[in-house]
Image 1 (cartoon, rainbow, N blue to C red):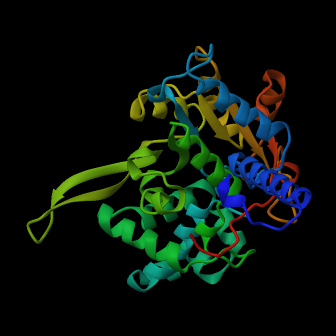
Image 2 (tube, rainbow, N blue to C red):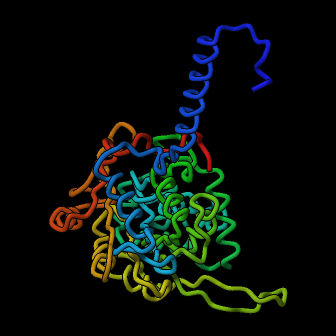
Image 3 (cartoon, helix red, strand yellow):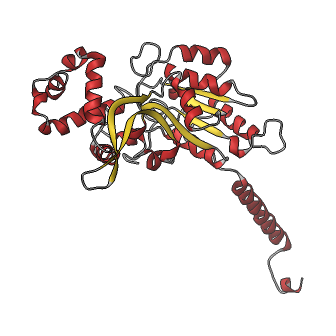
Length: 344
């Protein structure tokens, strides 16, 4: 200890200083050793615990519930589960806006319903057209063009359109807690998929940037696409006014089987349209997780369930209670709803 010779500080003071330094180092080590919160936008509670407990069990090698990474498939509905769906589905808002954009090329729409009513802002006239009118609007705005042209129109709309209540871009109205959840699952070896009743061609242009889910991991409703040679001699894919597949309700398990090829072990939805996906997920062998987002926050988002025309949650809610599925109370379980900034 020759290096200490000649020091004049009292031995007691030197010893106290060393002890204090040791405690500081130990505390710093303890703080740095604490793992970050995997779901920072979730409040502590039963829903958050159910998720982290499930992931902990299926990723523990040698444990009774261990699931190999290749089988860690998670599926998410989109409308009302990953992003807002009120006061109407966002794809419908896109279709309405596209009618206005395309109107100069269709002077006949000034006298034809439902286009006349839509252009005039006559909601009653549009509603009176019913399902037939909606199909006419969807056909006019979603078909008769190449897949590339349609993708371009979707991206232009995403970049410019704003929600009527929040005055924010539609793709900023994604749920921060679900972004955190998907990132947490991917960190733990999951492959995340969207399985939505929305149009697959409508979702694929923007979901990778927004959710981190590549377009090949999006399952949705689709129309017929036809291969043609364009006027410039180059091949193109044309969107035809004919329905190919509806990925909603009982169509979701069919779509999962057709496009994913593995039964999920983890699934999240928010409405009766997701019931069959949740049933299919939980009926498999081994550990399973089913979650439902319950919209209970009228102040930060919307509050609705059994009586809503959009995102009706009735039968799925009853089954969730009966089978012990995780029901997320948006108001109670989420610290925040949307990301802080207006864009993604």
